[in-house]
Length: 111
Image 1 (spheres, rainbow, N blue to C red):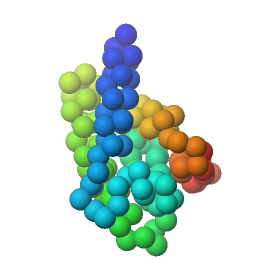
Image 2: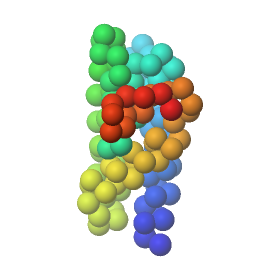
Image 3: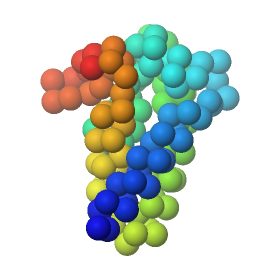
Image 4: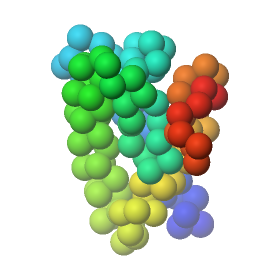
């Protein structure tokens, strides 16, 4: 039951963090559409195309917010941060739209 509760909180958090539009010229959704960033299994956004300078800045900003949120969830639920990160990564990859990038064992692939 506890894992289900944490899972729901992480799923809501992932949805919220995907909708956040950072202060940069491109939103997370736009960056994913352009193939600049993708979801990683560790719960964080990764840079797919490092040639775009805004991609790294965007990933850094989003990942900082995600880490803060994951730490809060871990603390409230008395669980390990890496467990929350892994669950968030699983949920983010599950919710990734077809055609967007996800990172797997072999590197970046389109879902």
